[in-house]
Amino acid sequence: MRITVLTGSPHRKGTSALLADRFIAGAEEAGHEVFRFDAAFEEVRPCLGCGKCRIAGERCVHRDAMDVLLPRLVAADLVVFAMPLYYFGMPASLKAVVDRFYSVNYALMESRKRAVLLVTAADDREETIVPLRSHYQRILSYLSWEDAGVVAALGCSSRMNLERTRYPEQAYQLGRCC
Ligand SMILES: Cc1cc2nc3c(=O)[nH]c(=O)nc-3n(C[C@H](O)[C@H](O)[C@H](O)COP(=O)(O)O)c2cc1C
Image (cartoon, rainbow, N blue to C red; front, side, top):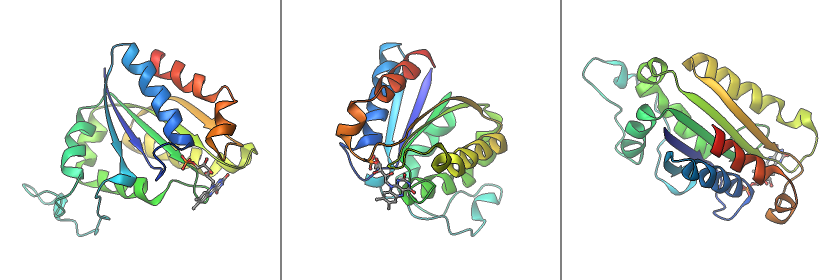
């Protein structure tokens, strides 16, 4: 299976990076091919909403890291969204990537993918994650993708907190079994 992992944290050794690392370790051990895109370290310009990509024979006006990502995204069987919770939603770097799905919307819809959400948050109350879960579910139903699992590591503001929990193991198992 081809898996594309999208991360959204500016911390290479942060909490959500650990979940992504463990997921990838499980997935690679299970024989899957993984392509990782760390949005916070890539040049991804915001969608201009110009509509050029919707004109037959045209493509997105931007030339940036999405040129590399989009073919991998379209070809993927499973897409992983790995991020820290920022103001009850996804970080801007990852949202910029999701907005740029627009230029390949129909290809993404036709390919019937599955998706995984890996998220870390400082707050340990389940309610804190409700808006992001809902956003994730809504994106999936819009694209006709299926949810393959969620690891929500609540109460984890530091790597040390997270390492003491079962969430990294859950991410690893999800990668192995997805
Ligand atoms: C800009 C910003 C916004 C945040 N918003 C939230 C939030 O809404 N709820 C929450 O529980 N934690 C919030 N946090 C805390 C992070 O989600 C948390 O520390 C996470 O573990 C950081 O992940 P990382 O190490 O992968 O970057 C926020 C942190 C930052 C920097």
